[in-house]
Image (cartoon, rainbow, N blue to C red; front, side, top):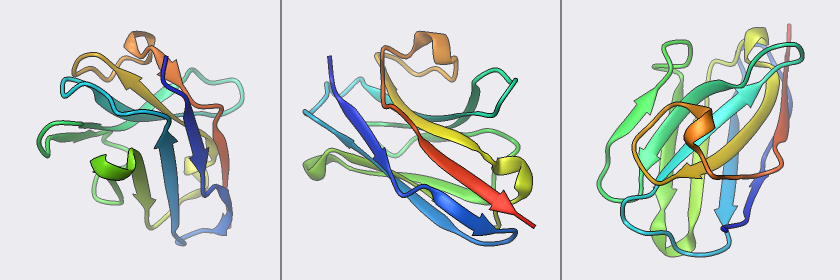
Length: 122
C-alpha cells in the first residue's frame, strides 16, 4: 500500500486559486493512475481529475474542465491540482488516490489520502 498525503487546502474567495499537492510514499508502476476526488457533506464522492504515471494523458470532470489542471512530478512522487476560478460549489474535501488502471470510478481506487478541505466563499 502507498501512503498519500494531501496539502494545500484552505479558504479562498470566489474566483480565487489554490494549488493542492499530493505526495506518495513510494514510486508506482507505470500503469498506475492518480486521481483527485472531492466530497461535500451529504453528497457522494465525485471525480475531479486523473493523470497517468506514464505519458501525459489526463481526464477532467466537466464541472472543472478549463479551470483545474492536474500534473505530476514522477521523480518527486507528487501529484498536483492547480485550481483556478474557484466557485462556492467547489467547496469540498479533496482527496488524492491511485488506481491500477485508467478509471474515474472512485470504487476502483485502492489507496487514498486523508483529504484536505477546500472552502470557497463569496
